[in-house]
Image (cartoon, rainbow, N blue to C red; front, side, top):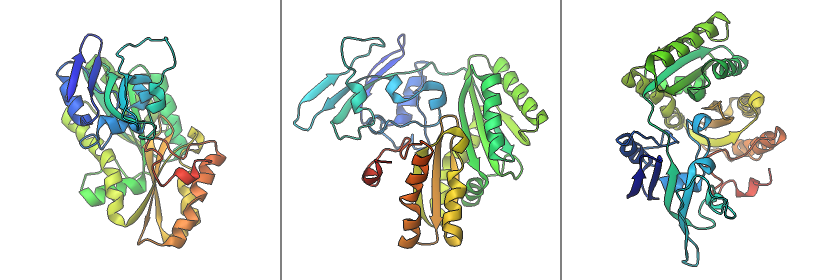
Length: 333
């Protein structure tokens, strides 16, 4: 249950079993919003989000949970209750023990309650859906967005053509723009609709004039924004419908962000299909590999090679989905 909402301070205190989407809907009534958002928001619990240090779609704007979590209540393995449930933004009276538990996946204790800093609910939201011809131009587009709409930029997502095609095929969505190798979603959140929409339109026009974006649409109506976001959020649901799917959640420096997809595709050849999509704004790519059926020889080609590749470029083998059981033996990467 929700324990308290301090509208003035923008702080939510709740039990760990609260569903993320329910929290977001409740906070909206108080002029606030959750600082994280993800496709699984309708089923994931805030305690699990904190335990895995979930990132989601808007980490670019609101930062990680290490920055937004103010306090925690936990139960340790011996049954002791650890009360770290502070709601203060500034507290330098000792070690910040709460940060040990964020992302620890229950290995140090079970989170039972959370205090989290919540930003104001935006009065103006705009979303651009873009078609781009190369990953180099994805980077150029991101850089241009940071220079032209940085004060309201809230999300920058990339989806490759194979991922979009899978989503459209499985769910029957209409393609928002033409056929391109890469697609991007650029979202702004602010307080002045006309101002923010004009800035995003100016950004899109310059991106097209400079030749880094081929085509794009801008949505400001909530229903249209929801339709465009649904395409991105359904991608990880659509791909597993195509066959046996291996999923990898990794971080890479921006210039190597997409390189892991063709690298793995070349390694497995025609024995599978590699897909790439994710949060280009924070370097987190979701690599999905679809096989017609499970084949250990193909898995052996992928693991541990994919982790070696990520380590080679100083990336992380676990960006936001946690370590769990499957990645423990690869932590040395």
